[in-house]
Length: 159
Figure (cartoon, rainbow, N blue to C red):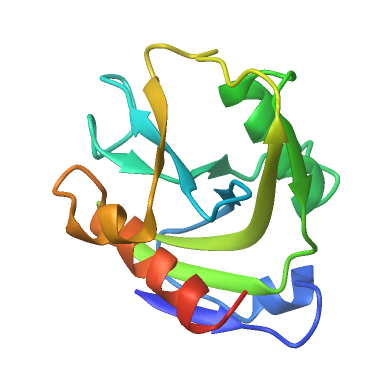
């Protein structure tokens, strides 16, 4: 796992620098509430991997996504519905993680939860949502190791 803090908005040129075998591009939003608690989703039984465990909201970049922001907004709507109000930052971070022989390159957004209903739109892929404190994340056996790593990097880099 590697975290890259960029000094600018992530561009397609930044992503093209990664040239790994079995590479896929994705987007992640790290959502915190006003108290600093972090929203994680519990992966459902038909998720690609890590079923039953908690991690940040996100998914694959699709060919029809016009940019990374459009991709994360699409993912949030597909997974949480359109009622949750999330204020998105610009993206200036990249996260690389290998899972099941796939090299995932994730563009990271930070989000602030402002209110509204968080719904389970895809129950086969998401069992629910929960706000965790930073310490709860680090000490929970139900949070993925990659999510713990990402949370540490976001905190350490003061993003």
